[in-house]
Image (tube, rainbow, N blue to C red; front, side, top):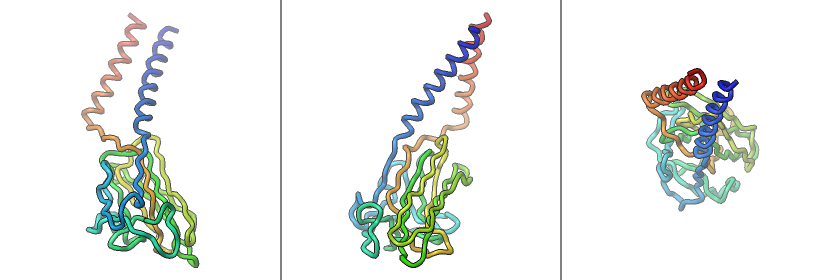
Length: 214
């Protein structure tokens, strides 16, 4: 009985520490083009985030990501600016917005807006782990000009190292992207650090068991 109570207290303490760490990680950071003058290069305006244009294979291209005023034909989701590159305010399968984090995050969202009144567009958000593995995707409903949907992915733990957002091929390829939000990046622990935490946890548990059964 005492053993059960002791183990219960141990795991309760561990869970409490985990909740505290999670609350720290839950801080959200916003990158909105409206916060910057027209034409501002946004590649590294936020610590912990790197923005760049990427091709269909997600490999970065030498095109800066900028803030650009959207004047025609529909107003952006927020304010009057959207993410742009090479004086182009839209993103498609050949020109993707790539977001790399200095660490890993658990949450990411970005607004997608249709730009064509006659042909629908669908936005796509893909998130990847530190080894380049696809962790999840979000695809919007077909959207027409001026219609907006926020593409968002939330993981159970911070493991998103980078992401791409773009307009899916097969429809009108001129979707807009705006208002990026992500959780505070968390440093990726070295394998040795993880091993030390596992060893420490094992020693703590062993100590509790020894106290229960002297």
